[in-house]
Image 1 (spheres, rainbow, N blue to C red):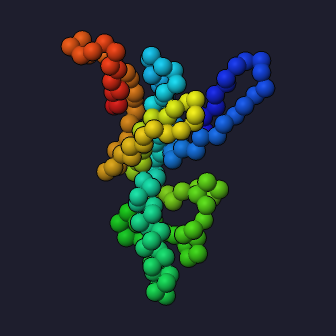
Image 2: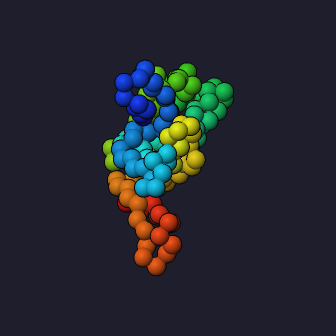
Length: 148
């Protein structure tokens, strides 16, 4: 969740902006404080696409009458029977192996609390830093987002 204070001294307002992962870094656009770039990342977590794939496989196995293996192979999580549809916001996400990362870069409008863009990182990648810059041979009003 992201907490914003609109005006100090007025009634407190806390809009909720659901994020996929834990927010690690946030910066605002240098010319307009209405836009923010957010790095979201979690360790020992699967991406949204991987979690959906695991749920589909689990449901297919349950529909076929097969039970999940006692010890999953590879990077497959163990999902106990009947728990594939539990709410992740309440019960938490499936845990991946040590050293596994899931991350996303979100561009957010802070005024409307809407997401302009979200880019999910793939192949166990994550980001740790954000910066904006202006290149001397480009238009000075063009700001570039650098993600490291």
